[in-house]
Image: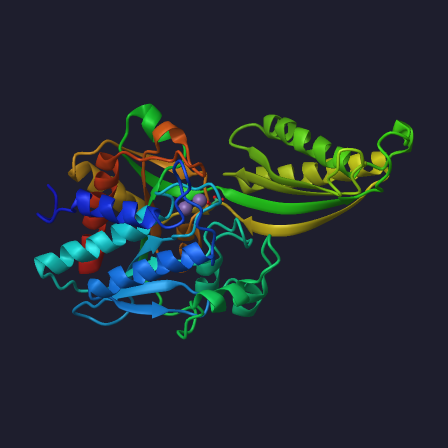
Length: 414
Ligand code: GLV
Ligand code: MN
Ligand code: MN
């Protein structure tokens, strides 16, 4: 038996997803709303307007996190939900936006029913979850929980040389509220799966048990630029070759470590980047992920050894820089069980699964009981302009979110 007669309005939620998706829309579909860009500003403005229309008290903190508070009968820490509205350069309409806008939908359902909950509800949109412009990812939630100093976050330089602090000020979202407050009683994030498991198994709801560990590094290889026609092969110090060998090695590394290991070279830049010049410099990013910390460390060790050897072979110098490092996270078992039970009560097929992608929930899990709800991604595709989740699955996810939030908001067990 479900606990409530309240229902989410899937059409209203879909309309908000579409409206937000028009900001930074790419020709042919998808969105580009890199963190702290002009498009991010416009999306934030729309979100704040929606929050205000719903009567939420809007608070913007010094790292630009946006919080909308719906008061409860009692004061004290709120139940928090939300996600992010920044995207990668070739993003879709659902990654992040779904979680934030479903939070608004829950607030709207409560408003329309005239319900005053026991605990306050807080809808959050965290700054720079993607990390695509400014690493690390999950920056806003990291600052929120106190694990990344505000000053360090503000000084972070992006891939375009701009800093978080200057961009936040430019877009008008360097908020006055201190970071780190308020604390939350619990955090629940609805998100698209971004992988193929739910669709493949014909399951509507994923009860997310945890998030795999993430290791991001940037390697800079320095060799010597020389003439492509006159430099004998044996005399080259080709930074590009070492980077390319590293890219190819990642496939082997993932296969050798086996299991869940994934390895990606997402960005590679040569310089001087000319047809007839041996590259002097190559910059490469590596993303390694595994659900087991020990295996992730092993992958990092093997990669470091390979890079050193490949660079030495070619007489190339190598420097590495850590961009992000998150250990695997296990969500609160009682919260995961709530998601599973709520999905069943609402008549949805549900399974437990880990998250392959990073999420603000994995950071919030450090400070309060946390879990996530996944809905299927068509074709398992995300970080791609073709990212799509069927409207009925969006609605189902929001309904489960409402159901679990209602329990938490009333402080009901288990
Ligand atoms: C964030 O979306 C990540 O998992 O890289
Ligand atoms: Mn996301
Ligand atoms: Mn993402």
